[in-house]
Length: 408
Image 1 (spheres, rainbow, N blue to C red):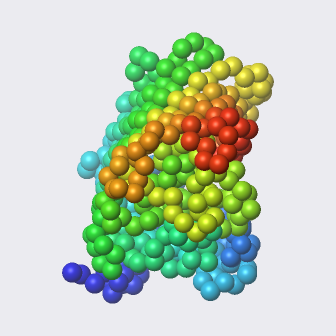
Image 2 (tube, rainbow, N blue to C red):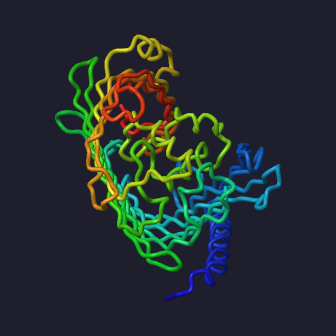
Image 3 (cartoon, rainbow, N blue to C red):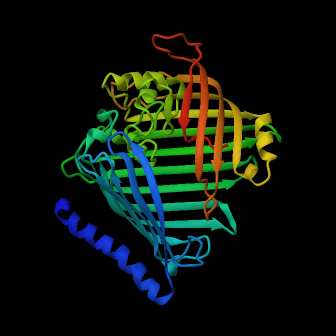
């Protein structure tokens, strides 16, 4: 087997040089813009993390041209064991198989921050329906190596292992409209090729459909299914109420302890949204984590249903000139139900369910492809749980969620 650990330093150096010199070459030929942006963040290990982000692009391409650069470097002011962190992403379109709204590209990514590193290359292809940015298909496939090298940043270290993983990953996302309303389909799979950690494969699929019942009422249903082999790394396994731990790294709010006060998470009121999303079982899952155990499943399937109803405050927001286009407050009733697929003897095969009411506040400024970009805060009240443990089935429970599984 190839010794990937020996070739990484040279590969990483080549990647960084590529991202530096390609923009410089572009500058000489067609002009190139580098936009520096000061950046400040916080977690309890780095303290106040100060740095600089740089966005690079060819003028007049509006984020869709060649040589797209997104990079940053930061310094932790508490000077932890690894005080300097960085992120670098470089995207190059492939003109021969690209057109307006139908770009194909190669992306190179390397990052080293909050005790985690990842280095990889991905091929991406998008198919868009005419000028409708919201109706598209996106496919990506690539190879990446990743490693959790510092547990100080983790609130729950048992969610991770510390070996290198060498992964082939593929993603497919589809969204369009049919007679009922908008639908979404997402498929994600990862295959670990081995190394110090065992080979494994895992996959998940999510299908969402909305039904517009009237101007005031919308019903949205979501189906989720995930399965993984028995040897799968813990950070890629499934939890009933929480997103798979590996994907906590995709948000600055959740990739390191202390950005959100640990006491809030340990109290069982903060949900990292994703996966089966049985929000009524958040407190039980957090209790398991607080006891240094693992609330993991190698397989899980779930249904989530939400009924949106009129909200006077949302109407008031919509009436505000300009700002109203980007701010929304939705209110809804929900029902979640799910169970393990029972691939291993230790996993339950009971049907778990919860129900309640909730509110979602969002600030959304779409990107150049029309995709949502902004802040989503959700407050859910799962007042009924089918399997409450030591509690009553009917009880006032509060869940504050980061992000949204169902986008209304």
